[in-house]
Length: 242
Image (cartoon, rainbow, N blue to C red; front, side, top):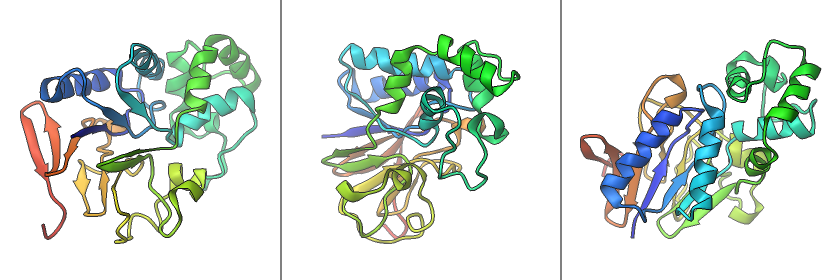
């Protein structure tokens, strides 16, 4: 039994395909692969990432994709143009917050991000396939595997999985990252960019910062341990004190 997991993609289609190639070499075509979300924004080909993952699932590939906070922005903009994500401390709109990477996503769909918001909306509603918007809006918030719980940002300690708030599942940092609570399953997450995948004992952060020019992390989780899967082979990931 094994589970592969891929960190935050952020529009990096070439890195995503290379990550899948590493998994193919390591685990074969039937490998179960979980993606921790944040498929879009910042990188150059958000549309291509969504197309690629949708096509793989349609072909029956055992690929699981959980919803990240960035995956909410585009779909919500199309259905509710004035919506501002409550997880944003800045309270700024997706297309007006340069750090969120909306411009790159819009450009990948052929939309001009320099236009006024109403004109961006009109273009986007024509350019973004309904299937893409539905895919992003309906991604599951978590995936429970016998070896791990995969979720984008983390979970609120002390709250049953089925009672977790969506905003926590896609946004949480404080209260989760510093917790040493034993969650039962290993919690595999992204959202908080670090230099490379790191095992903390109760959780495993696999957001290696692909959005910022760093590698897209791939890990394999097995009963005997966790490894980072690189082009050169496997590297063990062990928690502090192990």
